[in-house]
Length: 85
Image (cartoon, rainbow, N blue to C red; front, side):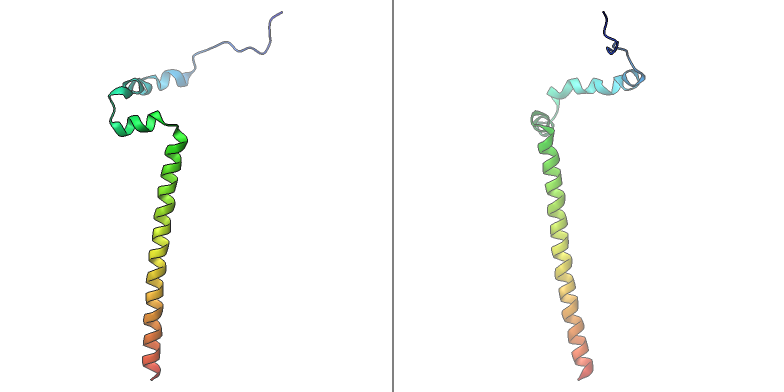
């Protein structure tokens, strides 16, 4: 009795379309040290590192904008107090 749900291995159009794109993967031994380091670790650490960099840049930008807004508010208060006097 044969199993009805087994699938025969077939070569799809995607396999042949992008076959030449994967040829460069075999030369990872000759890649730079940074690429070898990233390839040796799991990809989750790379994603984590990139996301942490993005969060730190956003935090830095928000702190910088907050300081500029605080300076602008002080300048506006000083201008209003000199106009009233």
